[in-house]
Length: 399
Image 1 (cartoon, helix red, strand yellow):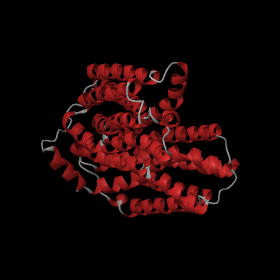
Image 2 (cartoon, helix red, strand yellow):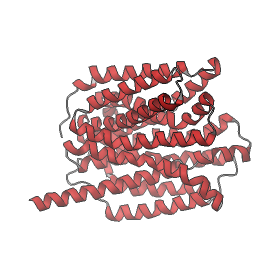
Image 3 (tube, one colour):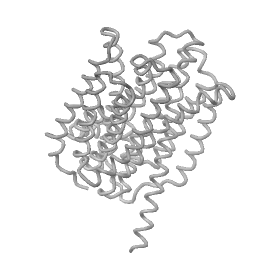
Image 4 (cartoon, helix red, strand yellow):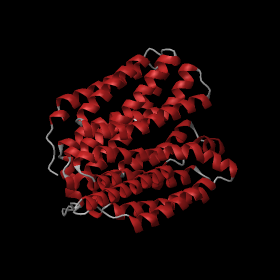
């Protein structure tokens, strides 16, 4: 009995590792355009709006695409969906690297289909969830979520690879890695034994998902937690450069530290959710975000108070993101985890693009970021009230 259980743990650990690798590799591909946006803007004489659109298209498609992909994962399982999405993502990666980078139209077409890589989050959560017992799902899903660090791989390597080779180099390398992963995952991955498989049609399953209270609760919480992480990772360099006069390189390095801490804290948030209720972890995380945003609204000196405020928010947003999906694993029906994950993941991805736009408009009107940060605190307070008075009283789903 003990031997069988140990083998089961090792098998689940291997499946978690493969899922996390797939998430990271596809997110690496998903983020290929962002580091090169400034080069494309110069070469193609793009306006600031066109440059923003170029970066936004893959993210929006990847976020919205999680809804059908999550539902398909409930039906067909991660063993089919991980290699399938990885193979499909190779097509826009090679197109952009070899043919589609000479015009804005080509970049937007390639970027649209590149967004498919961003849907892998909705594959991994139900896949990992099915492999682990309820008391370990928070930690497992949190570890899987650390695969979002694949965007950091792109940020750190894309420009260097272009400088060392050609514009096609990072795209070709990424395509090769995707192909290798697709083959390995198809040969090695397997779905969890006794995985619940829904029998209803896709449309009716999505409709049923939208009727679940946890879908909307988790979507609102994730829009704040992960949306806040995305917003800061996009806008923080501009904020630091404008508010504190930092160089672009210094601001980018500080943003990298923010992202790294958030990524590390995501599995910590999942692990803590296994020890205490996910709603409690979220309550603490959101309280830290409120405090950090209010402190930063006064634009304190960057050393040490401003740095402490931003790092505290990074840790809280990462932990809160991990806790949100520990909550999904606890409250969503077992055969609808993928569908719920798709909707919640879409909310988080889309939630990251509203704050930078608001911050830009506010700064343009008032030449100050204070109101934008106060609004962040207000939104986090609304999420905290939702968590305390609604989510924490929800009943655990049958597993």
